[in-house]
Image (tube, rainbow over the protein chains, first blue to last red):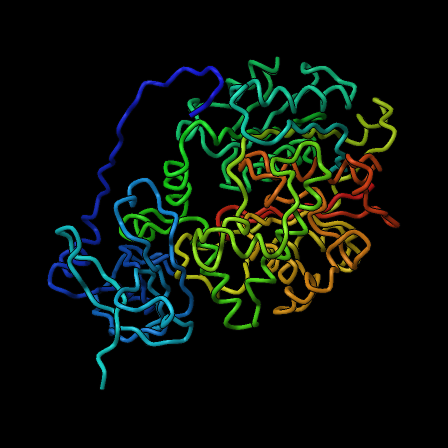
Length: 144
Length: 390
């Protein structure tokens, strides 16, 4: 790294266990190809990403709802210089899409040529399998 | 609340500083600040250390105690402040409150960051994780340039801002950094070079991005009574301070053409200082990426929303223009050692307000001696606006 004298710190590899018990229906839903959000039963606020507790009214009485799949792309970027753990990926597009429920989702946008991607265009929210895991992405809407 | 002045500042040379460790680098900023203030380390009652990467991209988990011991500050009240890229300004605010409240007569805000002890993909990984890891990074690997690139595509689509406009910001800030001895990147660049530079996260290219920088900066704050006691010739007063935050999930923001936290923090700071945006004579804004400077012009009220690009095209943010911005080179070219950046801004504002900008070629002329620092953490996740008056 440095041309000047240094000593190397003791190396460690860290990977934390992130609890998902309270949002398990979301992770189970993905396996069935569904993208689920939560809705506060008390105040009606819809949350994506899903939450177990409502930050508006502090109620923990929530229900699970399935989101619609039509999104409008509000902003995006093509990530070329990639982080350490994404070095094996090709450059990818990250986009923010708004659904009719009023929530927005940040996810990869796949299946488009970069020149086709524009702010304001439509995309379909769907679940694909990647490296053995289901992930939600935006893709091309079916042509009518 | 008591009046608080900045009575001493220091700034280490920004850059790739593999010649020093975190404590040695902090010392380089600390010593001149203490000397300028005419005090000794033992006079400092409270220390707020701004640093974001402790234990991640540099080796010390508790940099405040390590730096504190190294600088002869052991015994003083001590804390590390984290507000991502605004950690320095958060530390400055904490030191300000310590003095304003009457709890301390002299407090130190010290910022330090060592970002060049790991390689670039590791750094991109750490900074990319500094949003909402679970929902934005784990599956989607959104990087920090990516966060701002998302704002750039939205701003370009709504207001017609162009890649050339973004390049103009880089050209201006490199020009001023070439005149700043503490700056990391001191080369001047052209619009063509900026546009031809490799894409990092489209539409942002290499020259739209701040470098990965090591650096440190220090500011010593004192009560009015201490200012008199120490016979400080030209005290610079903290006239306004504003702060706000934004959602962790980028998907929950109101829009992507500005930063709401900037608007809110600025309104608070202007109110406290009893000034309006048109009275600001120098502004250092958070230009980690060129689009951020254009959005800052708008969000700080230097122009109407959507007219930021016009301001840079007309040269209004150069010295001699309507509102000189980032005449130290900005984060873009002076560099962005995360935890030090906000205090590095205070250093520059104080030097400018007392008429000692280095080099003199970039000294801003003042009438009313009012200047502003705008420091964002994340992509509007945190924001601090500080107004200083001589």
